[in-house]
Image 1: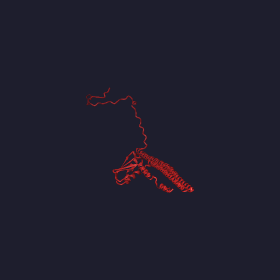
Image 2: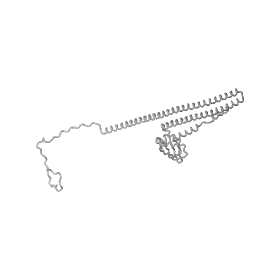
Image 3: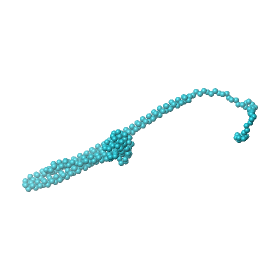
Image 4: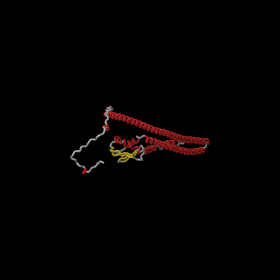
Length: 315
């Protein structure tokens, strides 16, 4: 068996040349003959440049198609967004219209109640006045028919007693009328306030720009300048933050504006804080101010009642 691995001392260099005999074959048939070389067909397909050019054209077509698909998707997204905004605006307007219809209905009912109360009070006063005239005429006729001084004096005393009684009835009727009107006015004021709250609530929840309007009005009331903190509802933080630059352009000498979230503030309202104080522009605060102004105008003046009392003072 032939050895494949030798150690260094096992290999010896020979000085004489060794001739290796060529193999001898018994028959020439044992030698395999090579087949004649067949000519290879010439390649006529696309070259490497053609393939690169085709790949580049395909890449360009794909880029164009991709740009078209992206543009088409953006257009569809914008259309969907516009339809959603139109639908949201329509829903908000429908709610405002419903609130307006309800407010008109409540105002009509309150007006009808107030008119009915005034008619009833007027009726009581007219009946009392008619009764006074009737008693006075009967007493006078009775005194005349008696034809005597005693009878006349007695009749006069009776008339005076009855007139005093009628005055009491009349005063009671006037007080009742005042109470009726006061109660009706109270009911109307409560209805107006309730309607205002509903309408303002619907508008502040559906119209996003309400908070921007409140912030601008509050900033214009500021006496100090410098750094300003605007506190709003969590739902209004993003929109208010987006318009910080607009606020600073509208209001001069404002060096910085920070928008903060405050859970105690209703959606649409805000609180402005500076180094000199704060401005409360919450929806609830504005409604309270409206309520105070309405209630200041509510008390009934006594001039009309005083005039009616003087009208019957000589009876």
